[in-house]
Amino acid sequence: MKSAVTTVVSAADAAGRFPSMSDFESVKGSFDRAKARLEAAEKLASCIDKFTNLAVDAVYQNGSYEQANKDKCVRDIHHYLRLINYCLVTGGTGPLDEWGISGMREIIRIQLLPTAAYIEAFIFIRDEIKINDVMSQQAETEFKGLLDYLINALA
Amino acid sequence: MLDAFSRTVVSADAKGASLGSEDLADLRKYVADANKRIDATLAITQNVSCIAADAVAGIVCENTGLTQPGGHCYPTRRMAACLRDGEIILRYVSYALLAGDASVLEDRCLNGLKETYLALGVPTSNAIRAVEIMKIATVAIMTETNTGRKMFKGINSGSGAQCQDIASEAASYFDLVIEALS
Image (cartoon, rainbow over all chains, first blue to last red; front, side, top):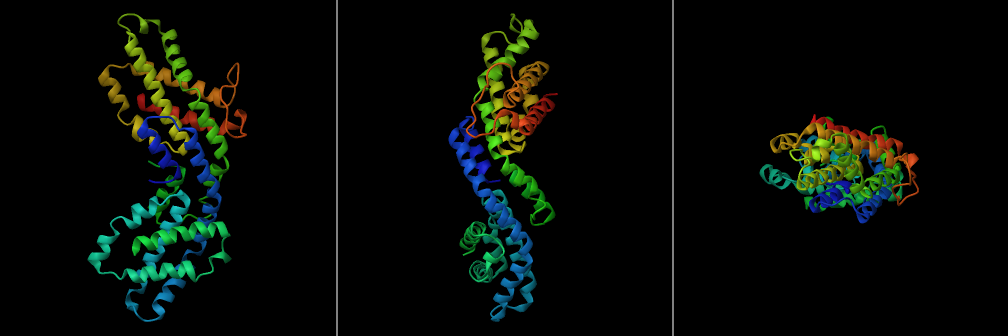
């Protein structure tokens, strides 16, 4: 799974060399950011239900989507936020790529799901919820970066 | 391939749970020990040929028949293959140590290694002995308990004596190699 360390190790292994000084520096760089990442993951885990409900309520408020699907939407948003929690822990986009994004287009096309609802929900979390209240500035930046990544993948 | 972080994530995903504060305690320790870990890996990478050559010299000294005609380290071509394999094992141990997880070592080095050695007629008992010597040498260099000079220069402040925990982790990776060959 792609993360800060495995990327470096894969590259070194492909070349058959020992980890070099620049590899160590890149690993070290990711560890320096790890504190903010782990904080964001921790805070997100504790607020995951709150964020999900706020976002889904906001999306369903204006009545453009069928209320019957609301529970499924809650489940999916919760699922994606959990994958973002994993990405924050690994320091790479591996969990989202492998478990959330790959194959997603096919599923959405077959089931005729309105991706716009997901996008609206994640944009709501990114822009409307005061994430700053629960986590530090740096942690928020890490979290929002992954939200952006997911929104772009869904769009 | 997994590292300490993705290993935690994979086991959390099996339960479908998010990772909260108590799950992250081990990872925080991993991050806090990053400097020591990098130094411990440097202890290997800066002494690869020394560790591998020592181990091969060791098995030859303990069993002088190896370099005689008919021995498994005769002629030099086979001795060279032996040194090369020692370095390859050290390389994968260094990857595993940096990643904090044995999956890279198991998937890319140990999987099928014993079968390969059996097919090529490499005596696994000697190979195991060489790995044991490499383990002892690596731990001694990492913890700076080797006799004589300090063998590696870390980029960070961590001195060898602080690498004790990580040295035992490294020893556990060598044990996996021994286990795979046994």
